[in-house]
Length: 256
Length: 256
View 1 (cartoon, rainbow over the protein chains, first blue to last red):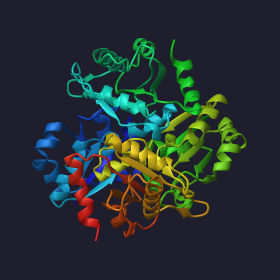
View 2 (view 1 turned 135 degrees about the vertical axis):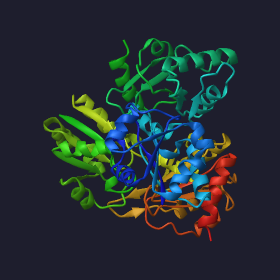
View 3 (view 1 turned 90 degrees about the vertical axis):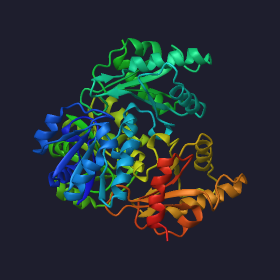
View 4 (view 1 turned 45 degrees about the vertical axis):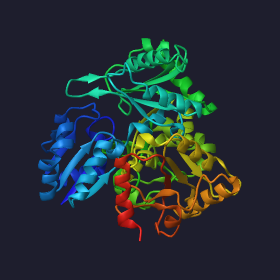
């Protein structure tokens, strides 16, 4: 019996790999993690595509009840744990993997696209991204995402901000929320580490057919509409000329 | 007519996404980039799986002759440009994309797994990786990979080293070569930034069924056998306790 950690990639039911789909077809139980991100399709689309029932796994199920659900199933039959993006970008899934291994369950990982490398589509060099940071909904007194950006920029590196989300409540942070957080953090710190004029790149639904990428100053992007989730924000560090050229593409086309 | 940039993921013909495979099936010409990485399967395996001829694209073809080959094809018929990993992790592919857009060719990107996020399988947090750096074959006087690691570690961040390769000559840098480079660079600099006792994580064939992950001191890993390419090396920064626990797994199991 094997527990498969299968990445679903970024957008819809067809972003799963052929290998991942074959594994799902072998499995007697299929769980979909439903708390670190969301796809642009519904659970029903996955079920129709796989011809199988998919069980939504909340954070509580994975972190507190895995022994009685996922790990119990995996001890009895091949079981799939579907993860949006690449399986081990979130610590919570690494933790499930470690618990499965400790319980003597064979594990197999089937990788897929992650926002971490998909941001390369902006033309910003993936290798020049520093520490990735997340902005939580309650951020009035939170400094760490702002500080991470300042540290990264000091070394010329880009910063990717992942934005908080709550699929159960249908609550998603937008590019504008992230920019407002950074402006407020800079004011609070009084060090001018982020301004109205700071160059930003906002992305929505990366990997989807209707993805939006816009580059411009913080105040320009505050006025832009990025539409449905999931959004993320990039604050570039030092730019190589190929990166500058690529960003021009997203400025010309998208900012009014 | 569309030029598809399609990620193939990390290991073999079945790591392509369902969406990517459907796009390949629509295409009248299929190119495979053959200079930034290699799969664990042959071009013939891809051809058999797609039922199509696949053209190997060298660096010279992509960077100098794209107008007469890839871009010419893409102006006439749907064309696939297959990239190992995720399409835009390498600047050379971003450049091809920019040229295609300038030539008025519609482009579509189909993402896939990259080593950048797949390293999460080690248990090291993907978000805590700093700048990624590459070690070239000729590295006697090259300081930048060593310096990048020192900068990352100063901020507690992990460093991923990608290792040089030449698929045409069949030449691939191994984990041991990378460690020897770092030991030499530290000696040359005389700053003790890397030692025999420095904790390292070596990976080979990430994403493949026979992948190897080993954690240990530099001198332990120098003695370890990682087998066939592609290898990469990680020098961890500050460790969280879940990261420490995960690394124990790769120490216990793999180091004699």
